[in-house]
Picture 1 (cartoon, helix red, strand yellow):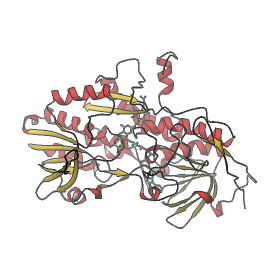
Picture 2 (picture 1 turned 30 degrees about the vertical axis):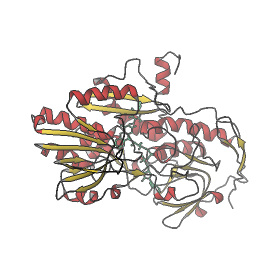
Picture 3 (picture 1 turned 30 degrees about the horizontal axis):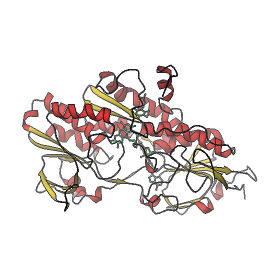
Length: 445
Ligand code: FAD
Ligand code: UQ1
């Protein structure tokens, strides 16, 4: 045996986190028996950020990342790919090229969690033992939950979705091809990542149709399961003005349940109707945001909350029951909007949580729910929404971010990819909190 972790719970702290006592019996390591100081499940935005941080902390080959995919995607760019502003290639890197040098890539999928024995099981039959576990598995796309949708995506060039690597390349050709009729954009009845993205592509499409002289022949329809256009009042007010001015039909509490591509029909349940009535829309173009869920493997595990997401303390990222388990990003039950911007802020907090917990101290740095959604509303305008757990604006810049601005558009289009590739996934970008404080000269939030 290389080393053993003694893991005991020592009560609940003010922050809600649980103290952990970790005592290494030996620090020599035995890779053959798959023992690691840290195992990270998922090598997306949060997984690579934490693997970089933990790799630097624990040293070479002490941190394993379980990630099945050959490719790593900067998903926020898919809005721009769908709008014809970036190529798909610009959003992708080979996993091996972005993987932290001090971590070990296990190209495999996690299929089970045994937190009582500090073990992750993989599809290839490995049993990975850890001192600490970081879960960063993201969300699972559930195209199959909409009847006929996968078939429509496979067969109808006018049905597209920015949400997956397999479908995002359909979006811009479909926007270009549409000459007249109904262009429908949907928002599902589940939590999703980047809750602004279903409408960002709509504004880009609307702008494209206008620029190409076909806007007056196209009806733009936004059918959302939500009762509001956006969850933060300040930005919702501006978006409502935009949809009105640009003559976009918005139908709230409309949930897509079926697509019949042969009839060019999309079926929606009216969620507020007494008998869950359905209504059919003919489409000529359909951009679908699919339902999403926590990954099945996580949902059915002892580390999941009742709703299937990883159960963590929202301010520290530490698991609510297993003190040596931590979570980051979309797969957690942290009650904020699921974005890469949130992952950035969470990575800074989780680094401090893990350091505190490993040294038997109370975590001091607490997450405020910071998240951000750059609401691209056209080919040169963006509203940079930034907010906290209470859906209150938490803006970085000393200007009114409720307004559409060209500067925020270029921040989103040209600067954010750099923040992601060179900062976030290297564990060096913990969000704009420092800038915010500097702009406020240390006053307030
Ligand atoms: P992910 O980055 O999705 O990574 C999860 C990883 O886990 C994946 O690599 C996956 O392969 C792996 N995994 C899954 N199951 C297993 C398993 N069983 N075993 C091992 N590994 C597994 N965010 C913003 O901040 N700003 C934006 O403008 C923005 N726009 C967006 C637009 C679109 C169209 C999309 C799709 C997303 C957008 N986002 C945006 C959201 C952002 O991309 C996500 O919130 C972010 O990637 C979440 O990071 P994560 O690490 O939690 O999950
Ligand atoms: C951010 O930090 C981030 O992560 C890299 C994003 O993901 C792409 C974002 O979209 C945004 C807006 C932020 C926040 C950063 C600033 C400078 C406001």
